[in-house]
Picture 1 (cartoon, rainbow, N blue to C red):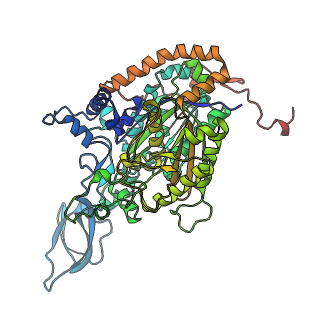
Picture 2 (picture 1 turned 120 degrees about the vertical axis):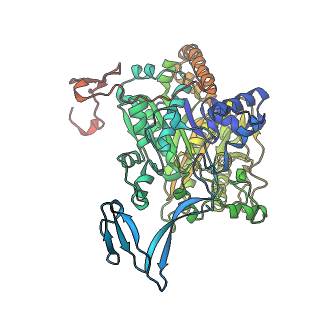
Picture 3 (picture 1 turned 120 degrees about the horizontal axis):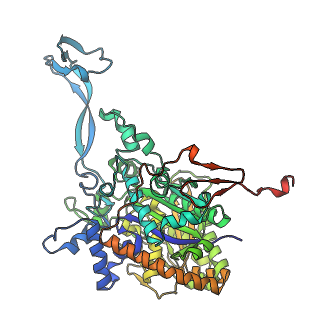
Length: 623
């Protein structure tokens, strides 16, 4: 009998701000909130952004303008109008010989070119006669074709919140996001680690593209070309699984299951599948799963732009009929399922805390929902590695079929919605809309509500599924499915006979939506779709499996948990929560472990690791 993976906590940071407490979701639907909720959300963002200046009484507008997708800001990343690069020049001399140049000996090439003539030598320098013709690289700047991105709120600097020690930005965001997820649970991690065995904890987290800024792989790959030295931290910090490593080493102190799965833009759902499998099988009782992506660098943007994948200023002008000297509306750079010109890159870190159903009841955990399962399928033979294929038809159909099996046709047809991958590219609007429309037709769904939140946040590559999941939880909490606000009307080539694609938010009552389906499509044929159960559905399943008495006891314990979670949210809104970062804390060596024939005792954990293991192949081994 499979365990149910209950979502007991969630958190992170994106262009919408902090995720826990549904604060990031509220930023998306700020226009549909009450004045009290809207003011609380904007005030919290103001604190997060450390914006003490009243900006001439317009601080609310400042917060709105400096969140979500917007023009790339030099203070956060780089100046898109002056991106440094090296221009290759063929230096052609005139009829007169070039004047000698003086070069410090410490700056001379280790192998002096044959065409150089050293004509004088001093204590610290030499004079060199250069040839009249040579190839040189000259420092220069140029404008980026892409000037929009989904950036973290202006002024928010995760490195300033803890001793970052040259950590890549994605790892800084990991520390913040993991802390946010744990705090949202309302349960101290010490309580969790004293309840479960050390080997019953899983951490699956990573990055779809690794750490590519100057402190990670980006610095390692570019240092020599830029005349700099490679740091001893560049290589180790650059590994794609480093978010999981940081969580184990500096946040949880976990010695349990760990790793990451990489599936391009479906990476978060790949990691979620690993965690779900662990909990369903009983291999783990609690799992922290997520992804962190910080791809807003000139090199990454240029790479995607070279593929024709990103929305450029020229493309946006052409869509809106603007003159060349008019700046386009960068807020509307990502336009899923309408006439569009490419996706908008973004940064984000999102994490969810899963518990098995018995542990959730025992600890009085929050029930934000539950993950029914995650389905992954490849595309088969392909002409182009980046082109879409058939795999996503399989993942979506399997996810919806599971929802039908668990909750029945009525829930699927009338009480479900879908979070589309919705990148904002011409190819995606056709292919994914066909997948969703055909799936809806297959299961008798007449008008399937579709969310496409990349229109607000941009595309955070490996973390995109995490953005979709935390916003799904926000929909259930507030009874709102975010509208596709960058939409005027669906494009003519979009398949929408059975889909509800609209600009306005879609409102529903508490308990009226049972299911959500999250879809992800990745380069190379990495497709994943996830079926997520609403909180009221998950709670009914807990009651059915464990009985009314156990459920009542959970409700009593949950009152305290809710109070703690609400207190964490309130302190976070005031900027009083510091990231969890245990550097050089509780470090264990081999001699600290209590090894026994029946169990292993790990310091810091109340429960031992059992060595009384059942054979996984009892029918193939001797009694």
